[in-house]
Every structure is written in structure tokens, then in C-alpha cells.
Length: 120
Image 1 (spheres, one colour):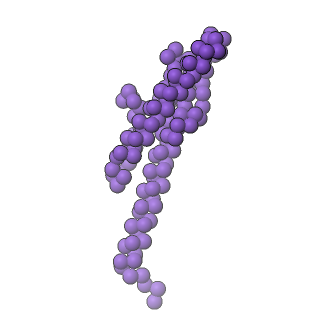
Image 2 (cartoon, rainbow, N blue to C red):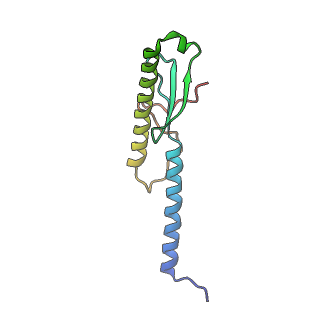
Image 3 (cartoon, rainbow, N blue to C red):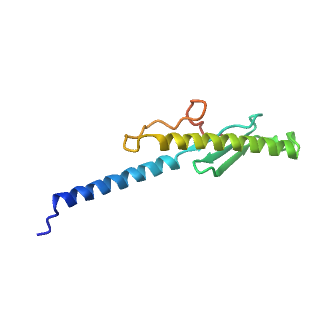
């Protein structure tokens, strides 16, 4: 006697599928990371899809090599580039067909390469 009408079942199935696709999209958004080095290559920030700085790598001796203003410029340039790259990755993801199956490849950065591996 608890039979669900076929139209109601179809709506429930569609809602479940939409929930799964939204969760998948959220996971792909959370996976966006951009790591663009500073002009000298000594500073590498990591920025997420929301533009938040998540890590900052300074090569050994970087702080001693630059004065305060130069170091600030290096860090800010790298953060700006990384933020722009993360924003491009986010736009690419959002501009894609939301009903298409997701690629298994990593998102591409602005220069067409995949996002670089963690700098150690």
C-alpha cells in the first residue's frame, strides 16, 4: 500500500541525481588550486577557487635576498597571478555543460598545462 506513483518516483530520482551532480561540482570546485611562481621563481603561493591563499612557499634565503619592498612585490605578484589562474579555472568549470560527465583530468592552468604539483 506504500506504492509511490511513477511520476513522484521520477521526481525523486531526478532530485537525487541533481543532488549528486551538485555534490560532484562542489568537489571539482574544491579541487581547484593554482600555484604560479613570482617573477624570480623564489615565491610560490597556492590559491583556491575562492581566491584564498592556502599556502605560501619561500625558497631558502628569499627573505635575505630582497629588501622589504622587493619581497612584498614578489609575494604580491605571485599571489595575483595565482588568483587569476584559479579564477580562470573556476570560470572554465562553471562555463562547462553542468550535465556533461566530468573529465577525470586535472584542471588546466592559464598556460594550458595542468596545475603544477605541490612545491616542496
